[in-house]
Image (cartoon, rainbow, N blue to C red; front, side):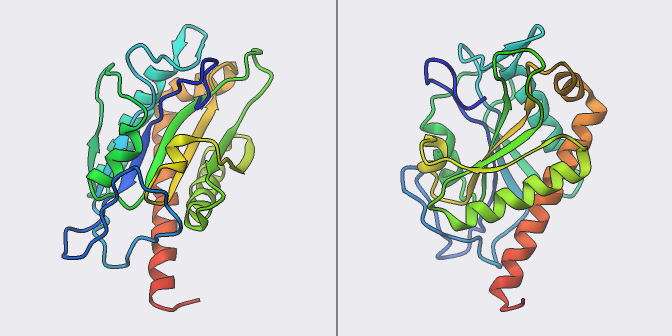
Length: 231
């Protein structure tokens, strides 16, 4: 999950790339985002994806599974789902590499991304007590709430996982320091045997990845419609 006991959690992200046209916004990752929307003219065909944790930062561990490994499996499945739709995906790590926390949101800005999604698996410490999906956003970022709602709704609808709602969090650095709309997605509880078994299934991860792609499509189309003045 995003919060380890020692507070040193790393985050994973998927971003929607902005076009390289003159004047396209480029964030630095250190800026505080206050409401930027993807421009309807932005290029929707390149994503930057960053699987959470890595190296010494294992994240949660349950049932012999390390969160960092499952995050990477999920990220690779998302990459495949997006590439099937003609989207190019950039991965910040494709193996067990450790990345520092500031580099996570900074990657979105450096690559001209317009969307940042942090990928995690949750844990509560008590086996099989909790289950389901949670999606976090920063309360000062209206666009992030819309992004969270679109992705969360698509995931719940398509996967059947328990709906643990979208939630505000102002204390998550990866969201607070993002210069673009950002969400942190907890894909399920690693210490819930049913959630874990589902997420370890390639077939289920395909369904999960497809739902995220659908949520992104709904969000981007909504922003584009708003930019055209449509209701």
